[in-house]
Image (tube, rainbow, N blue to C red):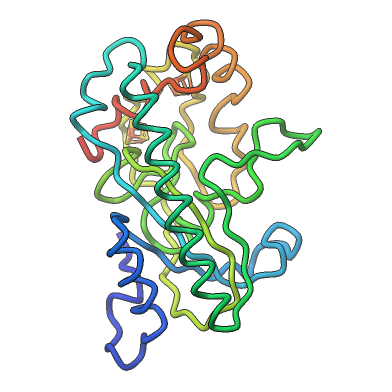
Length: 237
Ligand code: SF4
Ligand code: SF4
């Protein structure tokens, strides 16, 4: 796994990164990543060149209670973590704007109405996280943090602030593992190994996943969570 370049710099070289790092640590984030988004289409990155990924690790105690369906506790935890990430992203955004760097904070679960893809977000958090060097995309199409696996939630801030960026991850580390493929009750995971630029639908069928959650797990959080591919993954267990 390639290291985030930020980790190799002296404190004199990364003052702005350090300021943001201190802020998110004080607010309870598990990790932060900095990415160069300039290779993405301008519209997709909303004209901004840098991404800040805010990551919070989910509770192992809560995830470990999931067996063959999500739990109400997991649903509540999922929402609480999303709220905390959104608060942290807002604080960072306000700091950046106070310093003269307008930006956009992408909420953890913000979806947009796109006629071509009803399951897409305003910006893909996992794109920024992979470009920041924190992990890769698993066979499950989930972001797989190099240490915590898919047991994380994320938010993103788009900015033009002068940030030192990480080195993108360009290879999957799933290897021969297929645990998520076997665990998915909707058979929504195709089982392919991710490569940079691969469309999501070559990895998994978002419609089948969503339909299964709505039909099988409607009694838990109205069918918006599942978590079976998360808990099946050996990374971060
Ligand atoms: S969330 Fe559940 S249904 Fe969707 S891909 Fe993962 S295991 Fe399958
Ligand atoms: S369960 Fe295995 S194949 Fe699926 S994302 Fe995790 S490491 Fe990759």
